[in-house]
Amino acid sequence: MPHIAIFTDDPGWHGARLKRAFAARGFDACYVSLTECRLNLDGNGPPIAIPGFADRLPGGAFVRGIPGGSLEQVTFYLDILHGLKLLGIPVYNDARAIERTVDKGMTSFLLRHSGLPTPPAWVVGNREDALALAKREMENGHQIVSKPLFGSQGEGLQRHEKLEDLAFLAESNGVYYLQRFVHCGEQSHDFRVFVIRGKTVAAMRRYGKTWLNNVAQGGRCEPVRLGDLLLCRLAEDAVKVVGMAYAGVDIIRDAQGRYTVIEVNSVPAWKGLQSVSEVIIADLLADDFLSLCATHPSQTQAGAT
Image (cartoon, rainbow, N blue to C red; front, side, top):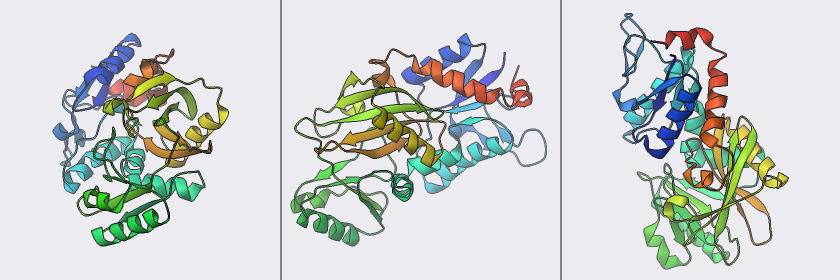
């Protein structure tokens, strides 16, 4: 049976759904932490060693998480993914896509450069500049959200409504990411749109208990029909710009009814979305990933036991 590597340090609900979907299609999948992989550059055997695959490479690699760590550690984990792709192993999403989206600054840059609607944002390397930018925004009647440059599920986000709030600016080792806050009416909400291979497959509206709408922060999910072509097209365009096979796109509609892209997630969770969707998202992901693997038959065979 061909083997698939699922890169994750916490398989949980998502890992179990993926493993079940792969098994139903005749593929065995095992969970692997990127922290346990290594480069063997001595000319003996595969240059990348992955636990559970002995002296062979997997038929494909499905990325469900990149461990945190120092710059050197994260670079090494991405090197493993880059190396696998260079060896002809399908990687989903690949390292380049992850690099573009794990860094919120680069995501905002790519969206803005492509002309897609996204809130004004700034990335600066010192606190004085960050405070000056935030004060300027507030003097012009805007609120500011500061975010860790790397992060997900709403963790570490701060909303700044008045000058006194700026004492709590979020930062990432001396780097500050600021984004203009988008008002969406009385009830805080946004949209999560799930895109696979350039096509929207599911969407939901998230209502937050606070100004944060993330499901991990207690957000409530409601289904959204895919008939909203503007919403779907914007999500699909955002995914195309950052070059991903699949993604979760966070979109907000302001008080004037205009959509704007907040974030693009290359390793998105979908538990909340699945709870309000008729399609089985893990099945769609497995089918798309395996179609990619099918274009590398020799590598798929090399991963068999």
